[in-house]
Image 1 (cartoon, each protein chain N blue to C red):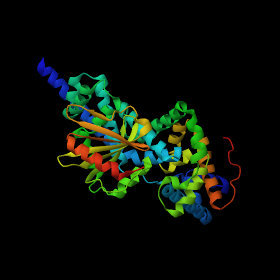
Image 2: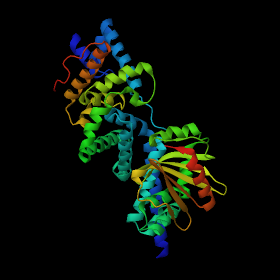
Image 3: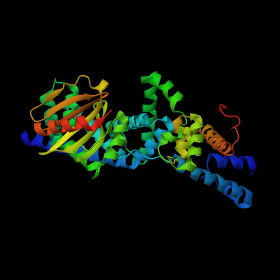
Image 4: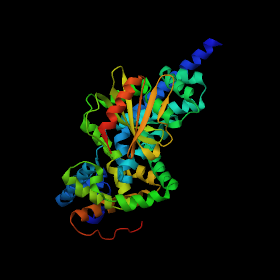
Length: 185
Length: 234
């Protein structure tokens, strides 16, 4: 009786350690990218940090459901986007705060690389439907198909948005007003 | 391939491996130049997206999950499973069990001063915590340290359940003493003096912030209280 208990508890302990190791590896490999993605999505450091914490907490809780390590990045982004959406469900007033107050402040991103400020401002000004696929492509290294799956769009739409995103950035860099922004499709 | 569809493809996917695109660029230097230009823009974009990650963020994520697991154990699992999971965790659980029913915030404070937790904090804190580094963190609470408060071995943001705090570990005469800074409106329920079998805690208000001091030596705690009352400005 006693020895059976002991065995059981030993295996529980080993499982916990394996899970802990997996989790730590996941955090170390992806926390920076996930944080950056959250920052570009949310544009407020404190909220981005909170959402990333929630994301990893949830990842920890459902770590057993992650079978394929190669899919870890997409899996985390899926959780992050869901957590971010929940934020709006929970607190409607946050929506107003963020959009009104924090928009497009390049200083908000913390560091000083001067030549990047302009680009950051331009990226902040992109509408979310253009910025998000662009981040997925450049920051996360997702393929068109992966982006389509994340955003629940067809691939052609994704490619069009990516094209328009770069087009708008290019035009903004040239100092022109972006033409035809907010076109649907 | 016509100009427009070439440009569209490159703009949508600068790293494309489409053989038609590669061939088209080979045949036309102007197309190749356009492609290079877009790739250069992407490099710039990638660098601009590369914003700095908060200090010790990975450690915080790992620590936070540890704390969550910790409270879960207390709520859901029978004690022997908790013990099996980690002997060290039991130290924390026993703190909490002893205190069950008491003040919630005090429980969270005690949980953060368990030896296991303090060791984790100190290992991620680095060696020398300067007054400047502390003041950077104090800015969140609209406060500052105006004078030395002793040998600070760790200073990190901590969540006392959901309340953000700055947790500092300071070397006292006989051992380590913990100091937490929290905003007052989040910590009204905490009593001025609280304790359990091993730890003594005291808290006091400095304008908008509350300072909580916890340690196992009464003299160390009161000594730090005296120093802190003078050193912090809000």
